[in-house]
Length: 260
Image 1: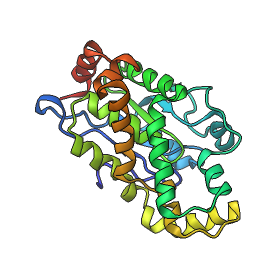
Image 2: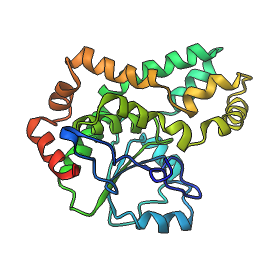
Image 3: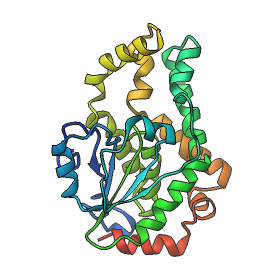
Image 4: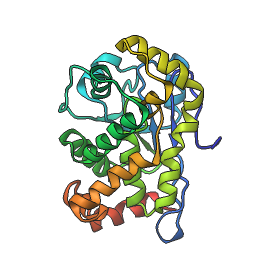
């Protein structure tokens, strides 16, 4: 994990999601595909470090209201930003859910599974997911791309899982990389303080575990997304081809570029 997770002052969960075995035993290129939480609080040292990764494409999966609220400390220039103007919300969906009802930990996990089941088909995600794959296909050799959302775990986790699938990474490895968020973002250490802040913000007194789905990840969440894709589209490959425009030709091009 040490080589994969990159250390920043005010940017969480930034890591290289290359380096795994993909199709035909080839390895996903390292130094080309990154994932992260948002960059709104990036320090000057963080900005300088980001420049060393030669990132030329950013897929920002945050809603418009999230982008407005947290700002844009990075990128400054020279980076193509992929985002959607769809999906604006006056209040974050999970905050609205937690504010309106008395919630226990199983209900919180169930809410998150439902979120993952819907996420791959939300128009704003389809738009940016599709743009991500087409932009990756045209990225110059030696340059890199990053996908982020707010915490770099849910929307980002789904898109990274799909990217791994396109490159032929096996399902067990896809899930292992997804669950690495819990270590990379220090979820166990941060959960008590995050729960305290959540409770203070929404005027509740929920147990820490109620908030775990909103701070960390669980395999059941990603299963919800991939299982629903299979139920609705027939297979992940069909979803990629018919919903995101990543068919056989596009897959071959991406594998030729990102597998070594």
